[in-house]
Length: 576
Image (tube, rainbow, N blue to C red; front, side, top):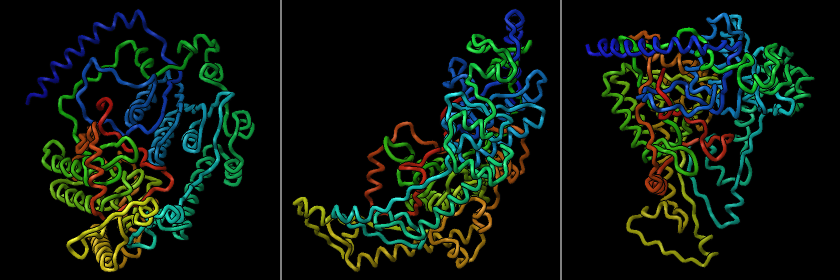
């Protein structure tokens, strides 16, 4: 009842402000840029969440920087309808986009090109990911001193068992799943055949995808595209000679290369025919006003599970991967369940797993939420082991291209430091009451009884994991076991194995969640729940890490020491 009145007052103020600006815009009216410049860097979120926006707060972004993929999509729609605009210049820099986001951006660029507009891609230095996206452009430009680091993919898998042996540290682990290779880092002297086979398969798939993108984007045969990848890296001149780029031009030379104003001074001032989206907006005779809607847009709850799952609050410690804490997630899921403004929810999962107990606690709460409103789980990077476990509580699981899922398996263990302590001259006495009280002490190895107890616990948790998958995915325990034992899948193979319902984009998953709730909305806003704290209680995490635990974890071999690319649902401006 109150919103129409508030909207009327706000829109009246906006109208008066726009009217007062018209004379100044007519006097200072600028010519609309022929090409609009966008900068895509890092890993911008799919959408910015619903937040309060204060008029005096400025966005902390560089000129033309893309703040979210949804904002880019809206900008392309507006530019595609303007006959004065010839196209866009998309500059890519230090991308960390997962394959699903990259494919979605390429799809939107193709739609923009289908409206008769040109896309010019540019970069100073482009690696595999940057170049794969640039191949969606009509023309690619590099500065004369630029580089094309098109070299294919490499994975370095480590086996440190011999090093631990030399140090006097004895890793003692129990696992369920021949393909559950996470503890092999500590226990094996060489990379196991299972680990090698899994990595080889992922390398084959990613290399084939890169070759296909280069062949399609540069109009090459698959053999020629594969040869170009094998012969990299390239200087800008060599890349142009081989047809991998079209123009040798930096930002000041680019207007002339595109047939615009050749004056470098005007290019430096941003008046040579290439400008930002804000420049394009300012070129209109009448200011573009974002009116307040009479009715509030539909809201969609989103709960991010980003990082290593642990019995702790969520946050990002100074070192290591981000932590998806069960304390924060359980509280956020309960708030989402009670929130009446959101008819559905999306569980955004980007986690290789972690504590089995914490994962089960989160799964339980996801199921409670799904009993009150539709929940769709979405994965665009990794939902492995405990990360996949929490997704099982959703009504449907969606995955983006190239994401990694599965790793149904568990392991547990400890490090026996008795030999190392002896070398250092340290004597530690272990006094216990109870046969298995010293199970996880590092001062001595496990006794046969302790190992048997831990083995039984791991077996029980693995059977529980299999039963959870069987219940959610409508597969028999035998079928789950055949897909389990730590095996990992790309999204397409996970779909074939019945571990995923649909392959698609984040936007499509959001639309599906709303459709399951009986809501059809062209516009919707994200309302986040369970966001990590600004300050991270490191002591709490360390206490949890030292406590007895069984892990449902897959270590992403190619993502370095931490889980990268976690979705930011807590910063930046609101949805415009």
